[in-house]
Image (cartoon, rainbow, N blue to C red; front, side, top):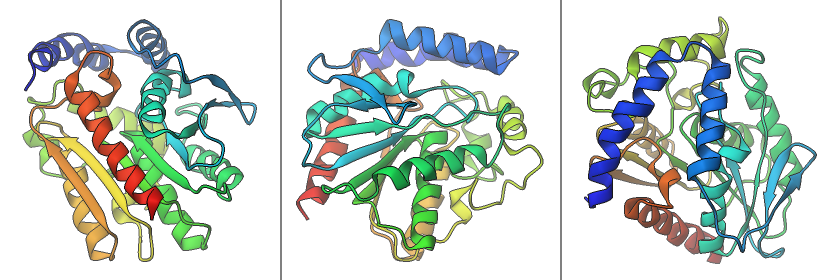
Length: 292
């Protein structure tokens, strides 16, 4: 563990976990995350940003190579392409690829399945990209990426080259043992607020719906998946059980569990060696899949 990670974990516990536990409204979470992303997350200057499809963001890269289709996290209620632009720009720069970050509607104003509908519409716009498409996402964005993969497979649409996810949320019923066992060790996510988030997002729908919780979806015939999670996260078992489920469906899965890493640590690529290491691991997987 780097010295910076030893400092970052208690800082996140003191600031971010406390803030998320106390934030009274989605609007407050949105304003805070947008402000902090502008202050602390900076991508390579060589990667240019433009508006994509009138809503999302497009990050520059080779026109003839693979396209990264990245879905931001934020518990389905906050976050945006702007908050995740810097991390994805770093990934594009390292991989020599371009990316789009679709903008999807957020709960509670637009509850389930608005987000799923939006990312599917966005995927249909890029699914025939000549160099192929990689799906990616983090946390709730990881849920959307995996549920999108299941829907693509069910509908027989062009498969992505692969799907990767950082600390994905895969079970909105929160039935994994780590949800309670890691409630105190997780330095970012307050377990006691998860029910509020799910209620705002689901708006009465069942958390067992496979479109909301990809842990319960079918993946027979799906392309390979890469996932990573920290061993102190409340979402640890979301990745563990998702890995077992995908393998039972015949999907090629690569899973990396990191010790004492906080929720979606690649966001801190500007300061954290572990974040850059993980992005390098993803890049190695992406380039290997692209060559095939």
